[in-house]
Structures are given as C-alpha cells and as structure tokens.
Amino acid sequence: MRLDPKLAFRIDSDSLPMQELAAICDCGGRLAGSDSERRAVELVARLGEKASDIAPRREPVPYRGWKTIHAALRLADGTPCDCYPLLFSSPAPRGGLTAEVVDLGRGAPEDFDRHKADLPGRIALVRHELMFASRTIHRSRKYRMAVDAGAAGFLIAGPLPGAVVAGSSGRTGPDGIPALGISPETAARLAATNGKRTTVNIELDTAEAPVEAHNLVFDLPGKEAEWVVLCAHIDGHEVSESAIDNASGVAAVLAAMRCLAPEFCHFRRGLRVIFFNVEEWALTGSAHYVAGLSEAEREKIALVINLDSVAGSPHLTALTSGFTALGPFLQGVAANNGTSLAIHLPLMQNSDHANFAAAGIPAFRLVAGFDEPEAELRHLLTPADSRDKVRPDELHKAARLAAAIATTAANASPDEAQAWRNRD
Ligand SMILES: [Zn+2]
Image 1 (cartoon, rainbow, N blue to C red):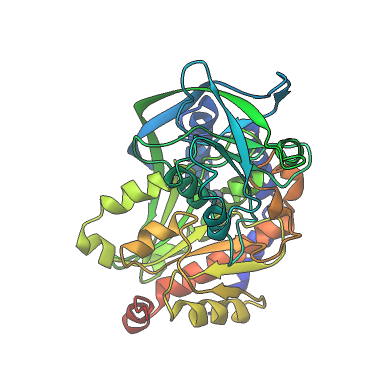
Image 2 (image 1 turned 30 degrees about the vertical axis):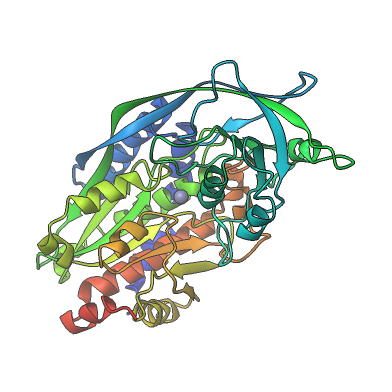
C-alpha cells in the first residue's frame, strides 16, 4: 500500500527528527544503569507523549547490573594504553593479570584452532568486525571461544585509528575472563616481534548488583485487539553519544509515531510503539518484554518493525529472521512507496527483533549500511558514532518506510498476516 501522500508529506516536512536526535545524544552515551540512560528514558517518554498525546507505560526490566570501578592496560615496561572494558567482563585477579598475548588475527574458529595449545593462561587478541555483514563473527562468540580455550584474558581491537572499541562480552554466567576493547595501534604494539610474544598487565575491577531499568510502551489502539509493534532501543555505550546506534532509530520511530498517531483508530490493528532499554546487554529489555507475553498476546502481534541504526547510509535492509513471506511483503511496500529495500532472510540475533522472532512472532530489523563496509556504520561502538554521521533525509526515509509498512500491516487481511508467520 502506498502511504497516504498527506502522511508522507507530514513526515518529510517534520523538522523535529534532527532536533530530537540531538537531544537524545545530549543525554550522553546512555549505558544502561547510568544517569545518561535514565535522562534519555525520561526525555523519550516526554517526546513520545508529545508525539502521540498518550502517556507511556513504564515497564520495569530487572537485570543484573554491571559497572567498571577501575580499568588499566599496561605494556611490560609500564606504558599505559587506552582500553574500554567490555560489558559484563569478569574482573582481573587482585594485583592484575600479567600474561603473554597470543595474536589470533581476525579471531575466526580456525584461528582459535591453530593456537589451541598456545592459549591456556595467555591473553587472546582478536579484531572487531563490521557488524552488519552476512559473514560477521560476533565479538561475543570470539570471547566465548577464548574462554573455552582456557585463555586468561581477551583483547579486541577496534577499526578506527586512535580509538578504542566498545561492546558486550556476552558473558552470562560466573565463568569468564577480563575483556578489554583497544585501539588498532595498541593491537599493532602487542603483535609478536621476531616470534617473541609481548606481555601485558590488565587491571580490571568491576561491580555487579541487581538493578532495574524501564521500557516505554505507547498503545495507539486500532479497531481490533491486534497490534503492529514499532520499536527502537534507547540505550547505548559510553565511548560515544551512540548517535547512529540508536538515537537514529528512536528519532525515526518518534517521527513515524507523530505522523501516525491520529490515524490508527481507523485501522484494523493498533500500533504499539515500544522504546526498549538494556538492548546492548544481550537484548535484555525485549527478552523481558517477550517473556511476559502470554501465548494469546503473542498471537495478537501481527508484525514487529524494529528500527536499529537506520542512518549512516542511504541504503536500508530488512533482516527478516527466517520469515519467508516477509521479504516479498516488505519489498512490495517499499516499491509502492518509490524506494528500494534489500532483504536478508537468516535470523540475526543483533537487536530486539530477535527475541520476538524466537517466540514465533514475525519480526524484522530495519538497518542501514548492511554489507557496505564503507558506510558510516563502520564507526559503531567507537567514539566516532556521533550526530554528524546522521543526515536528516536518512531519518525521514526510515520514518516514511516504517510508517508505510506499519499502516499496510495494520490493514492487511487476516490471511495475509497469518502467512507472515510461516518459516521454512
Ligand atoms: Zn543497536
């Protein structure tokens, strides 16, 4: 279905998305549990209420909080190097961890295999990869391989000259090792010279305690008790202002919401807008939300549209989580609205849509710059994920496409909506 030209015009002439993006970035990097994240949740609650005239429900997300108390990385001669602890990293032993570094290059399974005998008691060094590519090996998998190989520590080198890289270790249980993001220059200094491994010292003191964050839910009811969910995550990392990931998604969802709020009462299904929290910590906010849905409530969700990192490239891709009918449906909507959309079918567990998909609910992620190594999205999780990488037309485009998909899905026949639930 073509988005009503009146609605498309409403989005294209909306000057708020860049202002709202800046206001979200002004809160800071929005690491879950920080003051910056709490300020951002209050801001988005206000902006969402202004956009829709509806007060949000604040749904608590209890989770195991984690923070760094002290972190340092030093070469054998005492020279300090910049580092950034990965979320949920284990602490280093008292007095620090001193060990040799084993450079695994990329850190693919075959690299770990080749160095199996070298790793016990030593520190694994791997490289961060572009996250939005079909062949990416995720950081948390590399971390897990290092733990399983008996490594005593884990270092991951970022892509951006002079900058460390952030991310989550993916650790969920008590077993783990200290893990730091470092710059490519530090990685170059740590590579073996003349076959001789370098030695480093890692100091890392952390604290863990149960804490609570909040998801924000805005319900715009339709005629029937069924929903199209439109969502984006608020939280980020402290190394940057987390502009592309994911102030861009939040700003585009707010724009779509502002445009659609007066319309949904006329549609078959309603629009449920959710701003998730604690996404950067193993998708915790959405996992909690989906776990709280009864089987009947899951059946009532026709489609989940997750906007995560929708700027930094003019090209958008839908990651359709193995739901085969979604690709043709979404490409049809895009074509009817004069734009193109690439489809990547396999389930990618890299944002909140994955928790819905795992529960059998048709869900996809809209992302910019997929399989585009030169796109600005290469700066994600580094200090360069800043507002200057986001263009207003990219926010408008994502909001327009999300609005077109949401309205088409809201009016789709029960048979068509049922077909979206099929997987191979
Ligand atoms: Zn994200």
